Length: 619
Image (tube, rainbow, N blue to C red):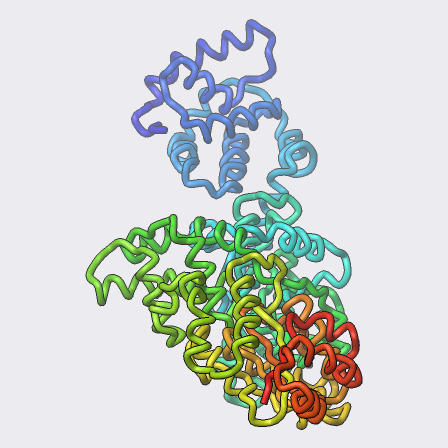
């Protein structure tokens, strides 16, 4: 709106006629706002839509006064509440044309306008003033914090995808009167921080009315500790910060890795009373392991927070996340991703990068593959082959293993086994059949490729069979997790597999099986001499045999979908020798039939029923 060119001389005749027109109609008093609206209608000036809507709203108040200068002052004050650059021209015009209002013979009551503007009908001013006061960020947070709401308004944060349930729970907790401090708990990389950024995005876009004035400030423990070398400085800094936060209810602190506050007694001792008073709001985020290790064991701190469990997103959710964020990576790296390969990218990451979580690992891949193709291939398009090369560099798995389809890899399994294992054709045929069915996808249940029990005397090749099988279907003969079950004879030794339970010595350490399967979930698990293990060992493996996963002592899920489990035993060795001595041509099936009663002395029926095949190795 360009008002500077309009002079009093040009406007005076129009305004005088306009006033007469209003007076003849016995209308309410003509105000400055009415004049601007009429000027716009007659195309003498052109108001932009924002100003026009604003002036129409102001006009609806029907203000009366006997002093136009007072009216102008109040109008300017009202305009400035909006802090909108679109209104600057109008404010400047009011400042520079005071004589313009003196020529108007308009009567309205100054007292009425003040009541209307500041007490009664126009709550907007009060709310805007309150909002302006509340969003004043303390200097410390301005310096060391990261204003997520501001970043969202600047379109520097992505909209979160597939986390509606967690976001809804987050909002519900924040709106509570007491205990309104949520804590996001989940494995690294599942998107805890992204959920908080998604909340900031919704607030910035006015999608959550109840939180529309809130500012989410991310603060790290390291930033709190910065510049506090002298004794007492940290306490003073924290106390000043908390005092400012208590006076400003519209600031929400977000502390990632919040368990680290427990590592510094000063921070935790100052924060706990503040949380107890309920006058500050904090969103925390931490891993499942660190929550149990640091937060849960401190009841005073734990009860101040409301936990929100954040699970790994599904493949479909991850695909939506990638489709949402890929444009920003394309713009940053100046590359183009083949969208058709995204699903296969996710599947490859799940298959070969098992020690990390979705969506973090696939986001890292799409980021790294962009730098890879630009620096080493000098091209701008990215396809599945480029992704395979990056995954190969990250994991050490040869690309040839990823290029082979499951059918090609397993097609010659029986032939390859027979070329290296002599005299155990029946065992080879049974193992090959089970694995081929699983690899072909005919077995729809999520469980290991095969669960086998190898019976036979020492030295007949049970362990060697497992090594040869690992070499053919996995990366090599070393892809075996070998557990000597004689090490788990006692009941208390069973805990060594999954780690000590909470509260026991060694809880912070991973179990033997936990650590091994995290490092290499694409492997053969060899349980050697199972008859020597305590019966409770099989309670652990019962769920693995049936559903292909279990949870360790820290609540983390371990998957066994890409494993072959082989148990070996010398059960019935003397019986095997005697039966073969009586009938040298006795079949493996006949031997198995005779040995099952011996096996049931050590294994419960529910365990035996979940074994795909019991195979007897003849001496």
